[in-house]
Picture 1 (spheres, one colour):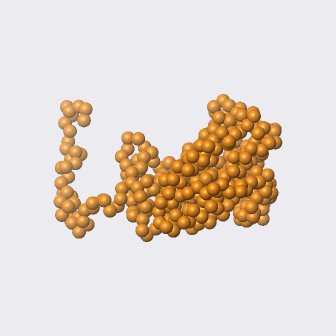
Picture 2 (spheres, rainbow over the protein chains, first blue to last red):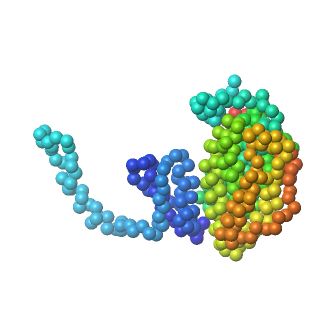
Picture 3 (cartoon, chains in turn yellow, red):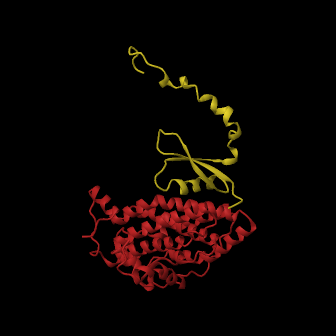
Length: 93
Length: 266
């Protein structure tokens, strides 16, 4: 339906995991968006909980700014914990 | 012996006895056919929407409901005998479904009205049938009750949105209600077969929940700003094989392949 807004769908696969984006559905309102999400994305036991959010409510970063936003992180490998050697005397880490 | 169905395996695991098909009284087999035929025929009807629903999401919703119903139909027909034989090699006069489920899809509104009327009834029935003295019937109903609860809610959601939607959607809903309403009394009819099984606790007396059913429908219609029509002359007879012209056409499509190619395999 062209006049139905788009909703982004998030599914929690099982208790303890976070909701993950799986796709989108069209629906006239939030309640039916949940029903459509259930019928479209959880038919094969994919989840135990659903979120839907209006796609227009999502604030996205500008792809044109990807360079300045993300590339500076590329050469900062010391931000990964694996960069550091843990001395043998340190326990419980 | 044929392989056990999932329902039977579950019963065995729980240490329950599995009824032997074919050694039952005719009333019980008749009742299982009624329950199975209701679900299977409506499942087949809803399947006709595949690829034709107003939106992809609705297409999936209707197909999901159809698959639930075909599953329930299979389970009940397995209790009645050879499910495939009953589904694909039975003539129209031997079908025992209620007339409501064989009604044509019409437009989306008429499909939703039919679903609301049937799923509300089926939900109330299965809730009670889960306590049937027949273990298999109880197990099938208990498994189906959650599925049907969802069908009922979805149909109510759509009824409210279409009834309280645009002028056109409200008009179409009113027409759908007009079409389907006369088939309600058959759902509450108690004949000799049913009376016998109610007596032994196998079947549920639908008259027990007719008031609840009417109030539940009234509440949904009120929220949808739709009117329940005055009671019309009821049309009954499906349980005795007196069907509308629509069922034969449905069966022709459903049964064509297995009847033309009896040895066909999946």
